Image (cartoon, rainbow, N blue to C red; front, side, top):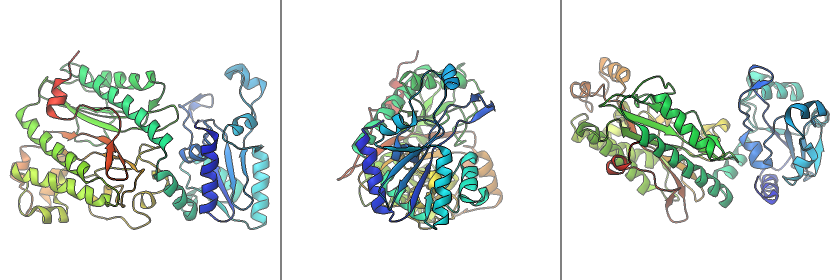
Amino acid sequence: MFDRNIYVARRDRLRAEVKSGLALFLGNEESPMNYADNTYHFRQDSSFLYFFGLDFAGLAGIVDLDEGTDTIYGNDLTVEDFVWMGPQPTIRERAAKAGVMRTGTIAQLEALLADIQAKKRPVHFLPPYRPENKLKLMNWLGVAPDKAASQGSVELIRSVVEMRAVKGVEEIAEIEKAVNVSVDMHIAAMRMVKPGVAEAEVAAAVHRVALAAGGDLAFPIIATIHGETLHNHYHGNRLKSGQMFLLDAGAETALHYAADLSSTMPVDPKFTERQKEIYRITLAAHEAAKRALKPGEAHREVHLLACKTIALGLKDLGLMKGDVDEAVLQGAHALFFPCGEGHMMGLDVHDMEDLGEVYVGYEGKPKSTQFGLKSLRLARPLQPGFVLTVEPGIYFIPQLIDQWRAERRLTDFLDYDRIEAWKDFGGIRNEENALITEDGHRILGKRKPLTIEDVESVPRD
């Protein structure tokens, strides 16, 4: 945990932002894999962590916005629990570490919420994403599970987003720690990639680095020869000469702050000339996006700059044609880049997306419906203290190419005859994590091999 005064200050600021009622923060429960005592790795709710810092199951927190009090609710464990878990702190002892002096049982929380409803005081809650928390809201507040997300307090959502979006110095230090571990994860992969190695072997080695550093993974590892599949979690292939290998992996620290890095490397010691052609274009888009990162710059424009750089490079290769600005305006580039250039990062690898992309990335404004652009998670103007990813890529997705060609989509900008010859290429993505500063940006963590020369120079085991 951070110093208790950090959590006290966060809750006090919340009281200044949301004027009346109670703010109810539901911690997460253990989640069984196949029976109650065999659970998945526990992960606390990120907003609960942000305001209370307590990394234990079965808790709920109340911030009374009128009376200025904070309370943690939970049931103390018994001697029978200690047999399996060893001695555990009481709820009161745990709460004190977050600067909370008031505690109660879950039964007392239920009684409080019933009384609050009878008095018609507002109860603010965030959209739940766990089914057990949806059931709690149904039992305690009468909120139907299928309506729980839509009945989350917009006032509370907006306040939490604005608070969590700007990272404090203690948070930046944790994220940078996660980035440094993640760089080690990627270098470990680069050292072992060669013909005959299994994707699963690389994924296991990468996961080991995160665990050995005292944390875990920020998200499931993408370790694949099929880089054109954006979220490919299958690890059943063996690497062959002539292929490329894409790793998208990030560490999460013990305090649950995330990093998110991607690298693309040749299975052979060197990239082929064909691979270098596409790699150089993605790297040019990557560097163009980085140069544009500064306070006040709308991230939508950063994304579009990366798109135009990709379109210009592919036009030079003969895969795209016509006016580049018009091609990007109509979304022709999305055949090769169907996702966003970057997203917010912090306690979640896609920070706060359980609260809704429209609030996190768009300040409540509607998103585009255009293919490609609709997948941009962050469009709003950047502010000092934002932490975000930089990850433009180029992907040759055979099924998407076939569909667009059959539909004769955007033929003024796409040369499908030439594109046909690239359908087996795969995909390339490289990714870094950036902090927006007062006068620009700073790439977080130690340097990850990024250029063609960097990647090729990493010694193989």
